[in-house]
Image (cartoon, rainbow, N blue to C red; front, side, top):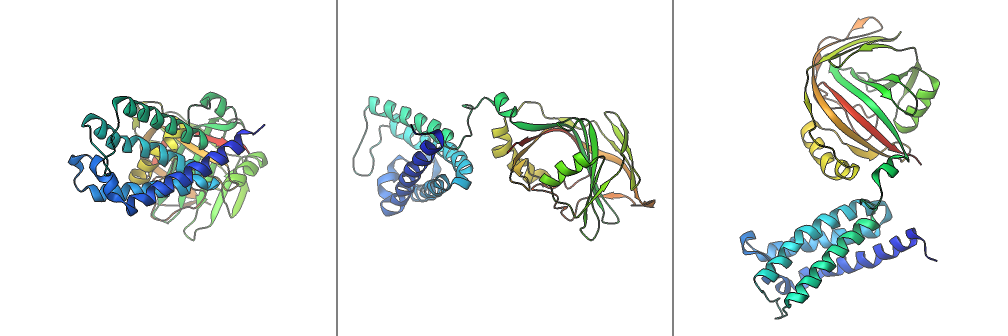
Length: 328
């Protein structure tokens, strides 16, 4: 009996080749597609060629296992967008370039096929609600807490993770990038250090007792290496729940544009990781010293820290969030 992975590979190959072939025909015979392009969009030839590029790209991404998930996301949104042309053909009884037309029953069947394709492509890429998200989370390491970050006049960049719930228990950690780019992790135990080193990149690891006092508006951290005080405003709460699929496809784009961050990516050891942000606050007051040397005023992140696939927000911030890391 064929297993699911083999079925996915076969379907991905068949559909990928089919869509790439259709995309190529958008350039070989664009006149065949042009009549169904909605007039409001303007030049039909442009949209036929553009959709051809997307279909070729989707076909290639779907075939390659490493890019299949993103290919599936592109395919789902592409089929939803392209149905506008099919709906235009149905409502206005438009013939294709060779005079072909469909009956009402034919259009209804075409719609059902479109829906079926969307579901199959989503299943191939494993991006759908077919997988119960609660069941999926049971296969993840989930960290709940707050991340606060700031850069300083000295060029030092500091990120503090304060986790009240995690597979490692309650703990806090500090990620510090100095002006020369050296990346240091300060962790409260060998266990925490080992885990964080497996998913992020550091040049040095320091094990020290970390004392943290804080509430919903401030945090004070003290260890042998440094002392920090962060205060933040109320900020704004994300007003709705989002699926991990939404976070990895839509939200990550907006996070990149507005905050210079990513909400989805791969850890150092190849595990999928999602950042589900619940509240974003602006740091209002920050003080920091390393080895008793004051770091001066806070500033924006001008240089990347390079701890992982994402960077801290450009502006000094404190975020309430959940981090989901898929287990190998």
